[in-house]
Length: 415
Image (cartoon, rainbow, N blue to C red; front, side):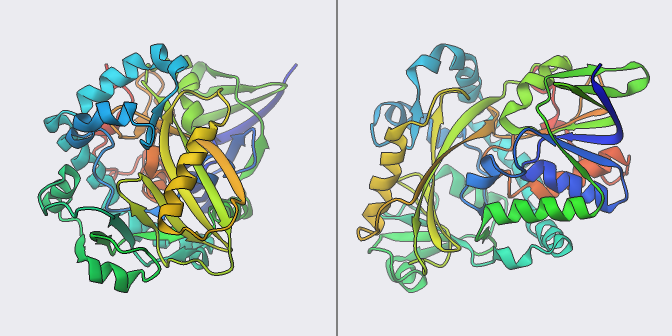
């Protein structure tokens, strides 16, 4: 018979979202068990660009991307790639993505993202202070770099949306870019986001957050959840091999692996996977002070502790295929256009971003099982929105009246 562990709250997933939720609940004195088959923070939370991007209200699916989609799909140097073997399975997701990229829907999705992002930085500062992570954060902003022609002020859909929503963004001339980041090659100009931040070590961030959560009394179970079984009385049992964990409330924060478990609760959520890549170069002093995204190349270059990380590109192709060396080569070719004298690549990484067609996360209770709360699908904004999501989930569990309107993020919004 399987060992049975009973708890008040079980959190499935020990990425940055699950850890932030666990830390907040444990800090409030709640009994918490965090379940993950891997080391906390070892997935997408480890390998991302390390950016906190409160400016990123433009959904991935938008009119500009839709207009450029044919070129993005056929250009060998495109930051978007689709594995051919995965195309049949991706057709429903891609159809929804195209639908959500239409102007009115994209604008609606952007406004919903902005509602979450508006408190992202103050909540993160509070979380970092409470968990003693502040030394890992740098508040130096982020730079979009235009190597060729600088677009008109109203020339990009995302820029217009950010203006509409009051996001702080500063257009820089070529000279101003050079003053901000002298090591960059000459560029046409840039857009600077002064309210952005980054972490110098995502792995240290999640590792220390996990330790701080454990110090508050939370337990960590290294296990894979195979089945989710609702019980009489509203409790939920999680079957994890030779163990079973039964909780009054379960928070599903398993990132790209959440779809499988949500289906067991009767939720048909069109979650798919963006396969993200990074490469790193070891160096004592990085040539840049803040994250830089050369817009035409589609990745971020981020200064981190003892290394320069190049992270980005989107490959659609599921969870099982191996690392694609073409994506690694694309990142390396791109970053050497900025810094030709970089040494050898120190490390290569592939991870999985949970992605919804409308670029909005799923946050809220299951329609069939109110004690099952979804908190996944944050795409490129998992680290940015970890603090805000943790506050919302805690509010739902504690039935506080200050929980924001979650209509745009509800699990059953796709019908």
